[in-house]
Image 1 (cartoon, one colour):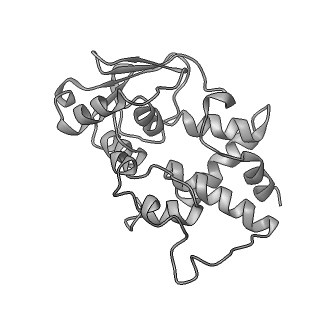
Image 2 (cartoon, rainbow, N blue to C red):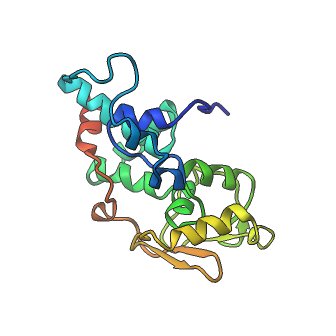
Image 3 (cartoon, rainbow, N blue to C red):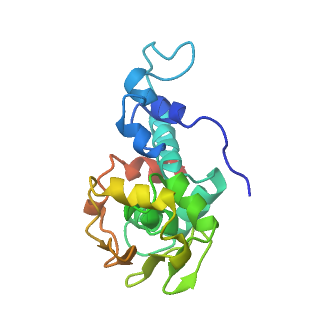
Length: 208
């Protein structure tokens, strides 16, 4: 499977916003965005004026990198959301939030979405009692995600759970820290997504 293997801190600088791609590192003084809060490259510190298309493209890139999707995955998911009833932008964000790797991250079992994706691929989680290794699996209301018995003592997961005690768990996820389980209590509403995302710009970009 194709995947990006380069530096990710430059993405935060490019989008002029913390995307929290490196887990706990993003909360320390080692964060690249904190040290150099300007776009990478020799012209990064110059004034940049975006056109309407440029703003739309930057918003799409920001959200795609935030959730760790490749371009084709992102576009296909948007096309699926566009076919559903309701507001396309909200449907799209709802589907991104309900991905298994995102739920694992939101529940605090991983420090970042990329780490969550790796843990899922290695078979460390159960969904409704069955082992699943597909990060893009779309969860539904009532689905339960649990760390497998063999993986409950994994240092990586234990450290993430301990660090997550300082973070806010979304209302639509019901967490049982003692059992290392998380349940999708309800479908995420637009107000539950606190990240500064303007999905309208993404809809406009793909509607051209």
